[in-house]
Image (tube, rainbow, N blue to C red; front, side, top):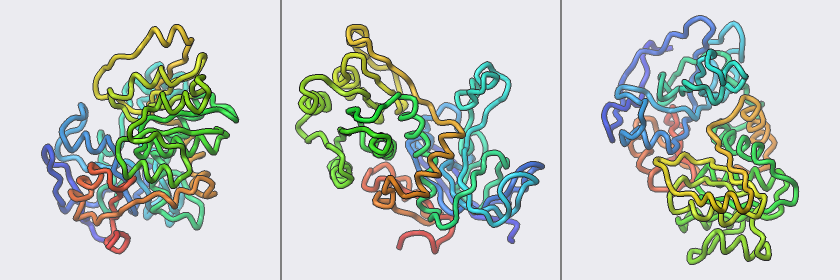
Amino acid sequence: MSTTMPAAVWTATDTIELHDLDVPRPPEGWALVEVAYTGICGTDLSILHGKHPRARHGQVLGHEISGRVVQEAPTGPRAGSAVVVEPLISCGRCGACRRGDTHVCRELGLYGIDRPGSLARYVALPAEVLHGVPDGVDLRLATLVEPLAVAVHAVAMSGLREGDTVAVAGAGPIGILTALVARHAGAAHVVISEPSPVRRDLAERLGLTVVPADGTLTGTVLGLTDGDGADVVFDAAGHPAVLPDLTAAARVGGTVMVVAVHKEPGPVDLREVSFKELVVRGVRVYTTDDVRRAIELVADGSLGLDRLPTRAFRLEDTSQAFAAAGAADHLKVLVASHDEDADA
């Protein structure tokens, strides 16, 4: 194995360059993973544009990771194992960590932001964040495990029951995955809103009830429920425009799940929260159990994730990959660490 590797480095705001870096040397208890694919998400785009408070220039980005172990740790997956990564970094000392809620650690960090990520040929990671992937699972598809874990966590926290009506604001990757997980969990109707015609068309092809271009999430849900509203409303958009729908589309006694991260505070109708006795819950990331469940869902094929349009770019074309991720023409944009795994 070479002692150096290609890596996409965030060198300045709106600038990613391909550099030749030393292959990382895993410290004791860590493994070396040969990266197969890295998914690009909204957090990565925020970093690129200089809008993430913790990210610093010179970092190798990437936290949605699939690959194979090439140098194993004393514990964890063996060399040659296909793996995905749970990229959270917890302090282990704060009140949340002491209560076992390490995923909402007061000092929560992330590989690809606070430590080197996976937009490279290799990445060194502690054994405990590596999860084995069953034989036969395509590593391209396995890269969806990390965002899928967010959806699994959101649906589990929502208290969704079989036969419920669900509303989802936003048909980006998290919104689509949340809708699919909700349906798999027993939701009788899943309504989703989205301004992009490309993503509305995808949601329709997946069998979801799509809000028309000239309609509203609230209007569609109320029409479907004889004026009652949705049992659970998921905000997967994180945009001020959806805030009125979050409370208006929910039924009396319903639940609003804030899954997307809003860039700045926005107005929420607290009178609706009171009058309807709504439960409003936030979602930050996921637990280890959610990651394991996401792996099961990818492996068993029950969500039909192979129908989701993805595009994989070469590592040297990472800048173009980020541009494509921002354009929303593909539901998920990936970067392949080996040219032969990229799309032509």
